[in-house]
Image 1 (cartoon, rainbow, N blue to C red):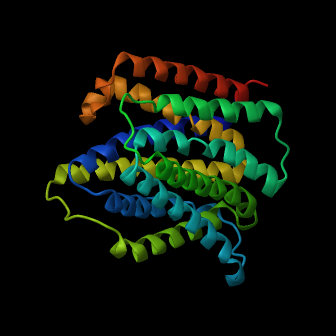
Image 2: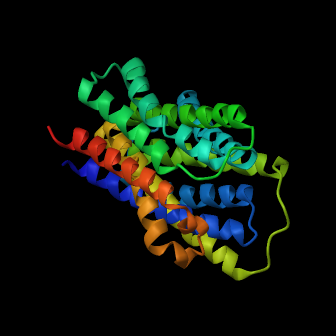
Length: 292
């Protein structure tokens, strides 16, 4: 198992822990838009630490490349937030899992890298696993169509983001493309934040502790994962391994969810059975990528 796959596996665990912490901060009164802005600014700090890795500044005429990638990053976050805010999470989260297949398709179409049947099978299997891991016992709200549209758009944005980092990043180098791209993300986030719906900030420091801790983990996993894609040029397999975050999320919710006052432990046994099936499928997908 190569280093990039190990790093992707660790990123999946970091993402699961970050999501639990950020969710707790939201429950204590910090709205999702503010959490997103803090996350982006924290991620900028993480990516600026890559500057000593060096690289080449390709000139002002090539700035459209990191700018376009930044737009995809912010756009994916925005669509995902709308999917969670205006639809059912039990529909949105599984749909976001199609990013894995979209990455594989984008790699084939935009980069021309050969993708074997094993990887396609792993992508399809892990996408099904994500759907089962996010199964709940709640009924829908009648907005499934809108949720699918928004979450599908978010998955497409994130997939294209990963592939374009792999396509354009090497010419710049990790120490130039990623920091410049994230400066664009910060600028876009700050520019649109005043126009986003928000509520007064809570006075409780406890809420901010959860948000800052979660976003620190999120920034770390984003920095490590995107850098891994740029350096190892292996976006499709790395995304399959990253999808283990669904497995990690189930494990953390059931084992330590009470530390975060998470209510998902109250799901019935049928949900647990489906999520165990999803965990088994996720393990199969990982094995398909790792075992040659």
